[in-house]
Length: 243
Image (cartoon, rainbow, N blue to C red; front, top):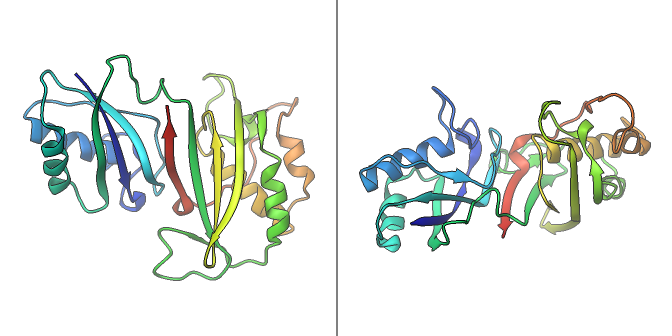
């Protein structure tokens, strides 16, 4: 029987989501505790990886069990065993053809940024940008990414993997006090893609590049030339996954 799980985590203390040898990861911790609770080896499959230091409000993964179990009790037991920076939000049975990665429709990420010097209580959860920044130009630059584009210059993804075309369906902005929240929705995002998008827009807003910098790299017909800018990990959150 297949179980769909929604989990939130603070990524500060982990080397990303995906399991790695001799490194503490979100997947590794969840699999270890889940296997202990169910007294059998369990593998989980997520909607995608998040990098070291990146957080999640609504990451989704699935796993299989060979008999029906009380998911309410499982969630309670699992959360008791997991560290405080990982929390299982929900567990539910789904059809066997459901796949956390391949069944998804789109993903929404948010990036939190505050335009001031570092503040100790925000440092791990928000990017504190102390440099003079034209906020309206920053927004204008980011909105250039809306649509279906070749993002080969905005990811560290290897050349020999799948094509670099992705569709960003929406980018919007809101504020919570001094914190700007950038919401980015699309059909899929490659490694460092959002951080390179935000980093490039910041470079333009700080006067390091012209607005045309994005035009030169987005849908480029030239040889691949990965952009030089990448926003810090701590401001990025996987917000939700839609199916």
